[in-house]
Amino acid sequence: MRQQQRDLWGDITDMTQDMADLIVHLARLAQNTARTDLTAAQWTALRFFARANRFSRTPSAFSEFHATTRGTASQTVKSLVTLGLLQRQNNAADARSTLIEVTPAGHEMLCRDPLGDLRRVLSELPEDVQRTLSVTLQRATMNLATLRQVPTFGTCADCSHCKEGTDTAYCHCTESMLTRPEMASFCIDFQPAGRVD
Image (cartoon, rainbow, N blue to C red; front, side, top):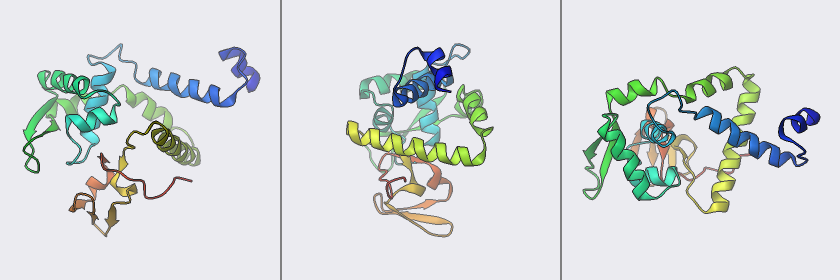
């Protein structure tokens, strides 16, 4: 196996360098937008707003998720609004900001998401490998976010702010009740319930 990797990548002896290169290469392959009408940044924004909870569907939250400036994030959002894939709505909880919603055309576009190929490839892995890979990637993402001092995004189901009930959960951060579907959404206020081991 190591000989095959050396043949593919040259004379590399550090396994972590191999993995880092492979992860970046996999991400580039997965986000290849050559056959789509959207850029990689636009796809990331469309996915984010489709997965974010009602407290996180703002341009500033997207800029933190995408690790870019607010200006760049705003331009990406504006381009998707112009294309009719996103729409702005007044934020009843905060008059200073607007919420971004995915339009029906945006949801239709997501059916052609280039990440669909990667999802299919991952779904074909054995279930135990999928679980291990998921836990490993979560741990690496959290550790790198901590190292870089940037927010870690996750779902309410894995957040220390949430107290889960049978069909709903209470978020201590937003002081709100969350529905079962909202528990699977991304949140800007995410705090890991515990380290992923």
